[in-house]
Length: 242
Image (cartoon, rainbow, N blue to C red; front, side):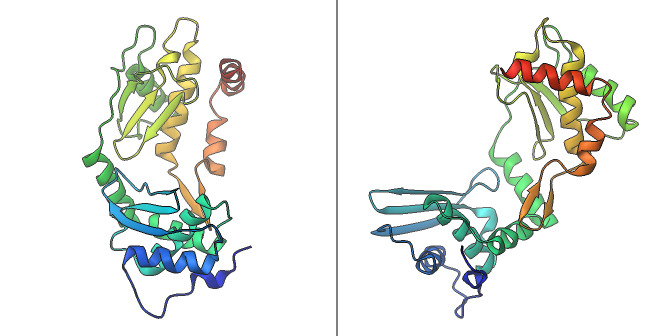
């Protein structure tokens, strides 16, 4: 197990990204040969970072949202990425350090700005052939939220996804529902439940608990069960996924 001292603040405050990765790679004592290593900041649409190892060449790309992060935060991310590709478990300290930084309000704002500026959400209009998402959203907003959930951009997905039936994108303020549900065979209450679930993500944003991201908090789950057809919707979703 990786010990906490791996994240000790380096004596030289080196902010050169390749050097950060080399330091962490050395401390992890990875036995897999790495002939060369490159790491650079990249203008991803959000906080995405990637790492790949091909022919002994290690290449990492880190979101430029982190360009001004401290060496400690960059080392934490480097440990997480390197452990991922070398099938190791990153330390709790690395995960907690990285999440604490990314959950800062100013960083969350920069992440959302990057997503809005660098990506587009392509979706179909909210009025489908059988269900109207806009009508459903406003009805749920009055019934369960006293009209306090800010109006989101709503639409059906361009593809009939079976795996992701609903999604809320905080950067774009968008709720997308899989076009697979725009069917006469899908009861209205099921589409309402999916939209209600995504509205709860607006009401209860992602939280941080130590080294973990909490997407569905206890308050979220309690509110979710208040949907009148909750049990029926869960059973129906299991049937659709089968």
